[in-house]
Image (cartoon, rainbow, N blue to C red; front, side, top):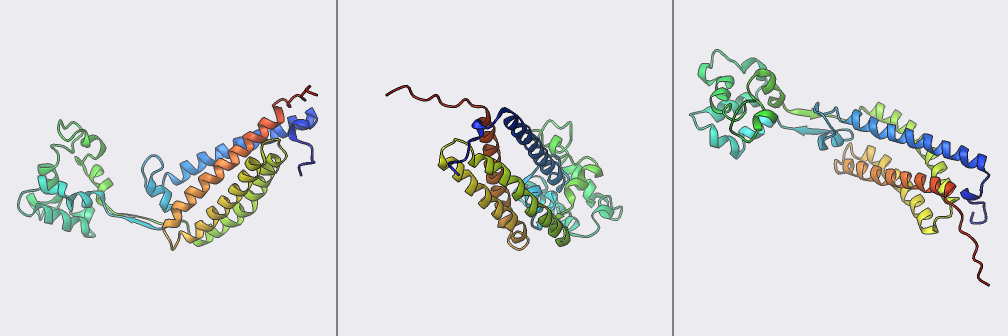
Length: 259
């Protein structure tokens, strides 16, 4: 392959065509990253891409209700000091009538609503002057606020049938696109260790990425490997694309005039 013409040696028309080809792939890759960010970022029903979003895309995860975690932690014990307040809230959050019993008339002053208003709103209100702004990030003034933190979150990855279709589509198309980009990199004048290193690292990372889609369903740690391997593949792909673009247009080295 070292005897083949290098990208910068190709005719102008071919270099223009290959440049357009690589730019189209760059736009497509950027759109893919944006799609992943938006698609997976909706899993925990919060803005942005969180670690829970990243894990739940590939492996089942269960998260206790944030309010229950607070009630059972040291924080709540500092403020819920009246009688059975802690026990009432804990029992309520562990039960299956969270919405129905929030404002229970039967419990009266021991209803979850009354306890939260009495013991928590000095900090967990939007206009509270205590709590260091926690009232803005975790308000507990109204039921619409409380319900956001009162329920556990069970997030599951796509069904097996969907994963089969996704694997079928991606495992047969991403390598084909990649071999074109890495193949062009091999035809560049960059040092061999860069060309060969990016080629090997990119495809090995892609293999780990796709394999871990399946492994993560029974081995949660593999979900992190999906993102790590995907990041390595993405970096190799982008570097290969930029290196090929650069080689198309960087001027050739002038021959030395030395005898």
